[in-house]
Amino acid sequence: MGNNETVLGKLEVALGNLLNTQEKIMAEESLSKWGLDSLKTIELIVILENEFDIVFDNNDLLLDNFGTINTIVSLLTRVRSS
Image 1 (cartoon, one colour):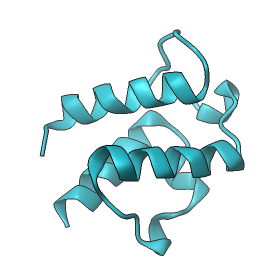
Image 2 (cartoon, helix red, strand yellow):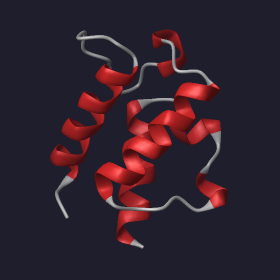
Image 3 (cartoon, helix red, strand yellow):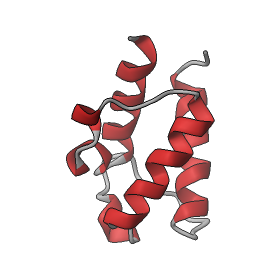
Image 4 (cartoon, helix red, strand yellow):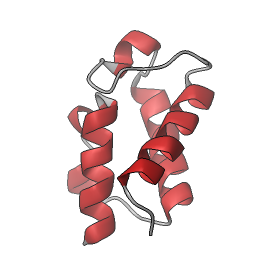
């Protein structure tokens, strides 16, 4: 498994594609400002599970866990290490 830079890079590409933007999203910026709603969050979960070959636990599927790039990286780090 890759390091946090690889995770961040893959996440940024996935978010850019999902949210249809080429602009840099700041790590602490609310992704809802970029159009991440509940439906797109579900799409993101599927993308991340496929990209990182993981399965999120039901307890991880909270909108707060997908609010910013930093929260997603933290979640991915925790899930991948367990």
